[in-house]
Image 1 (cartoon, rainbow, N blue to C red):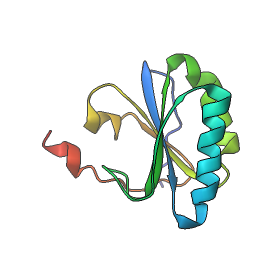
Image 2 (cartoon, rainbow, N blue to C red):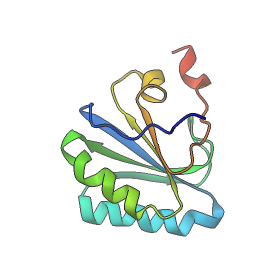
Image 3 (cartoon, rainbow, N blue to C red):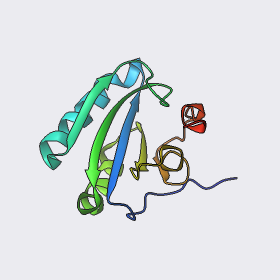
Image 4 (cartoon, rainbow, N blue to C red):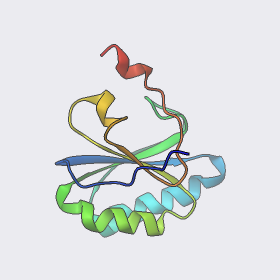
Length: 118
């Protein structure tokens, strides 16, 4: 059985995608609001349908190396049952969504075909 990779602070910039479905939408919105208030991070739009490589609704949070050490443990502790996809933001989309990808919660298959011919 593959062990889930845990987030490691090795990049200058990161994205965290809070995944949700109809049953967890309210919880996800609350979490994203808390992130904005407590960490003053850039919280993106709340996409209620799949977008890009993400197979379910999601909200993207942008953060950097300096926020990693406080934000990731807080996110793990406060995510409840939500799945969070964390990845480096290096400019290489395929590597960012594979080699530099980490999961908090249940790992979900994402659509990598968007990056394969880029």
